[in-house]
Image 1: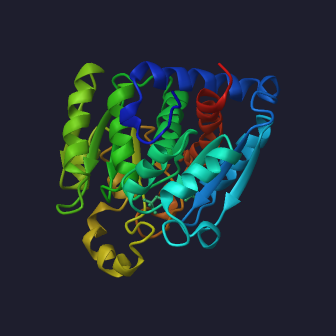
Image 2 (image 1 turned 45 degrees about the vertical axis):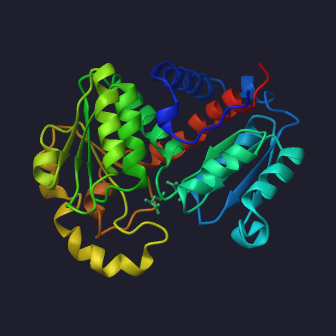
Length: 306
Ligand code: CP
Ligand code: NVA
């Protein structure tokens, strides 16, 4: 049966461990893997802009000996020019995998159901699993272990936050979320991740202010206040999230040497200050780099010959 990467929730803790272990090998010995996906092609269907996701998938696929095709919003015009199902079935006859970046999460699910090839969620309004895998891998790489460490996410309880909740819960990393009421992570995701965290002996906690959430953090993480598709809310959100900025004052509540993370793109002076994102403890570009290594591991697991 073909496998997809739609949500971190679908991965077991052991599968995440396996992806991380392969990621480590890929980072250490890139050339050893330079033919593993030779003759294979992925299609990238992107209905939103991207720097990291697009480039890391295209370069990653190339480094594995494979090929990739980028399809911009105007080319496929998903659901307008052609139904999701017809796109999925057609591409299944040409390529070996699909990376989809879209708005409604249901679009990713529908694509995966109709395709006979693996579908990878390259970001939906609900989740961003490739990002969360790279993030937890980066934390492990930097702190050497996850158990007993705490990642604190402050700001909007969005797609990135939802996926981080599942990833931390599965990998055994404690996570606090500090988000204003009305902008907290998906209730179901929160409940499910709290349950999942019990198995990995991690804790998941929700706060409605940033200072309390940041107490004892080993990692402070934030993301934009207005995600792609929410541009009209930008000004209103600046007011709502004002007290949730990742700045020097918030850093005072964190543990010494606390890592600074952001999935990027970042808006300096809004969700994070330049002083903090450009500080020596910021690992944002390691995160960005690890997107490629982790995704190469995912591509091998989903598309590679068994
Ligand atoms: N973090 C991330 O997914 O970046 P892009 O939107 O540039 O792909
Ligand atoms: N929450 C952001 C993440 C970008 C990588 C967005 O969806 O725009």
